[in-house]
Amino acid sequence: MSNTLILVVEDDFSVRNLMKTTLKANGYRFLISETGKTAVMETASHKPDIMLLDLGLPDMDGVEVIKEIRTWSNMPIIVISARSEDRDKITALDAGADDYLTKPFSVDELLARLRTTERRLEFMINSRSEPRVFVNGDLTIDYPAGCVYLKGAELHLTPIEYKLLCLFSKNVGKVLTHTYITQQIWGRTLDSDIASLRVYMATLRKKIETANDANAYIQTHIGIGYRMFKVDPK
Ligand code: CA
Image 1 (cartoon, protein in one colour):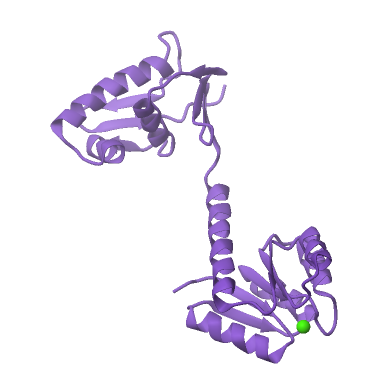
Image 2: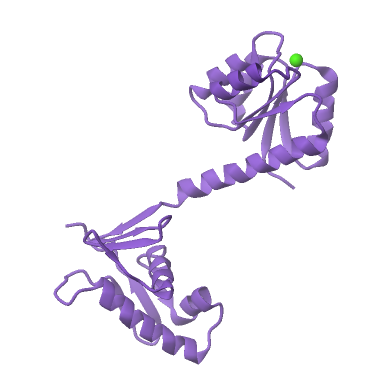
């Protein structure tokens, strides 16, 4: 059951019915607009996740709807139109449409486009809420690049050290237990894993904490685990 809310903008009765039936059968929530004006209003008041937009509407051109909505919203818009000329497709994409489907379309094709768009939406939401770069005192982690810097100089960490550091950075301020850490890194907790963890933590700390550095990033909780401090910005 999808939680995605779809706004269908279509003036043609039979196409509208096909879409309604398809969306309903596949568990989508949806709203219907028959004109461009109501489509803009529905978008503003209900904030749908995805718009399926017919280009030939009775009151205005679908491209105008895209232009209007793009001034204040990034919602994915999939254009569905009988016009098969490339010119219309390009105009719609230039105006800010995300995808294009030509009538007559198959139900499977429509559903496939929706799934792709939903995956993209999910990715957009995840990358918005997860920062790409972590900064703590002199320590910087560039997650997409998989690089760690200390005072601007790149550190050479082993894959396990890097995984450990990312785990701490994503839980900064929290004490992570030995069990939790070994589960996250090795997917199990054997006595030997806890012993290895100690070794990896020692080498990781040597790399990120220099002897005369006031920035001690990781605190040991004996018999419990470790915690990364949030270092005050200087
Ligand atoms: Ca139409």
